[in-house]
Length: 439
Image (tube, rainbow, N blue to C red; front, side):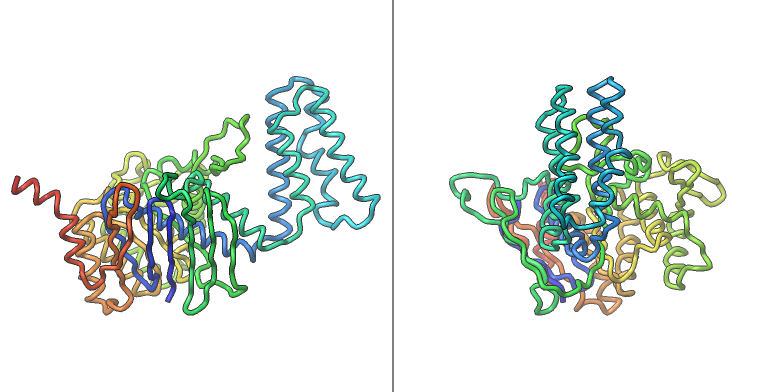
């Protein structure tokens, strides 16, 4: 049994959510449903980051910062000699030996510091020493000097994720009633408090975790189907971050969106003969529902829908509902649907006819039956009733949990389990229809 406890996170006052197979969160718009999914995504990514930080990643992070510095300088200066000093390959070559080795001797430390002093001097001489360039130089220096401090890696990575997903607006909005509220998040697997974090004024104060390997090795959020037709922009975009280079003209996107598109792009390597029988069966069923299949064309760098008896169709010309199912085809083809990857789905009914909502719910339940963990948020009575019915038919009642986001006041909601009281959820979701019919 995996559980997530939340206190004072954004609009959510409290929640204690089980992740034991199929987790369904219902509620009105702006009631914190999507927040839970993005929070889970951020936590699972951060927990796994502590064990995956390698020398290669360190080199990549240093290289990225050097390129950002060069982009800023080259956009501000037309002096060839200055631009050559900050050319990424030149700086990286000077720093490469320090990235791979600790700074042991005083002489090595002096040479290392001299590199940054020289760069700073060039910036000052050419009126390029700004708050941004000073900060970036310091970040490069600290990255090169850094050792594998797991606590610091997880903290910084989680803080970056929170910024990308929430713009760091994670503490309750300040008011006289909640000025002293602290945000608390705890993720448990069985009796093990695997991870907990305390936050005050949008800044992480402390992180605690056991050195136990987490069950989930990854998480994937499925949200808007329009990611397919914007895939080329997303792939080339930067992840939204507080330290984004102000001189960069690249587009920016949320971490979970780039993560999804990066994963499904790997569908280009799919070979039917290498797929498991379960994956083949899922693909066949989805193909029958939408009368075709999605694939990635690496030459065109875009996704296409191959419709039966019609041929290839650009994803932009494909119905949103078809794209909603297409995500699962592509995730299966790219081998990103497996037991250790938590699948998080945000309001899929927004793009599905009621008939297809039922088929979508049946597909989700079948995935859960095959060991896939799914968290889904919804405000559709069709979707909730279908998930309830199909999970019971498949003998998954003990592995299915339903929650309702209930508004406490204008500021907060509580997310409360209603697995044994689904009428409360249906009554709330049906209220607008009742008011319309009996007005």
